Image 1 (cartoon, rainbow, N blue to C red):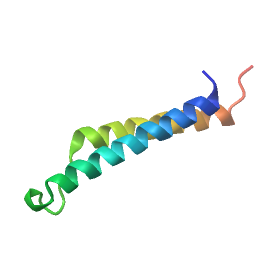
Image 2 (cartoon, helix red, strand yellow; image 1 turned 90 degrees about the horizontal axis):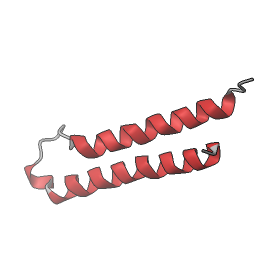
Image 3 (cartoon, one colour; image 1 turned 90 degrees about the vertical axis):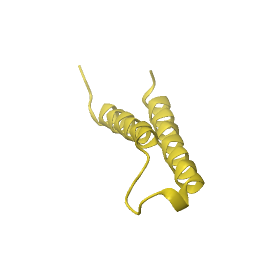
Length: 64
């Protein structure tokens, strides 16, 4: 897989997780405590960030 493609896909996954979390938080805003965040969307976001970091690591390392 190309590094540039991996970076783009990881960014889309992370953005999708954030958008999903914002949608859930906005739909149930009056019922949520001040500190509670929906976990499944944030897990998707964290996976996207981990994928993005892996792509950045691949870009910076040259294997022989």
